[in-house]
Image (cartoon, rainbow, N blue to C red; front, side):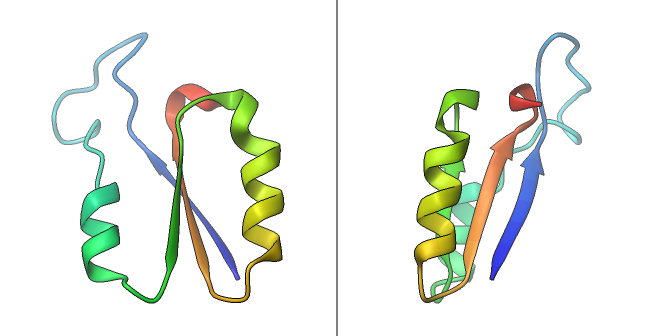
Length: 68
C-alpha cells in the first residue's frame, strides 16, 4: 500500500506556521510498522516510488509541496 502525503511549502509564499509544518518525524515515531520516505527533490520521485511499490509493508511517501 502506498500513501502520499504533502507537507506545506514556504516558498514562493509563506502561508504561516499552521500550513507549512512538516510532521515527518511524528509519522516516524507513531507509525512504526510503516516505512516512511521523504521526498526533498522532484528528481527523486520516480526512484522512490519504484522502491515504495516493491516493498512488502505499507509505505508513506511525504512530499514537499515544492515538488509539485
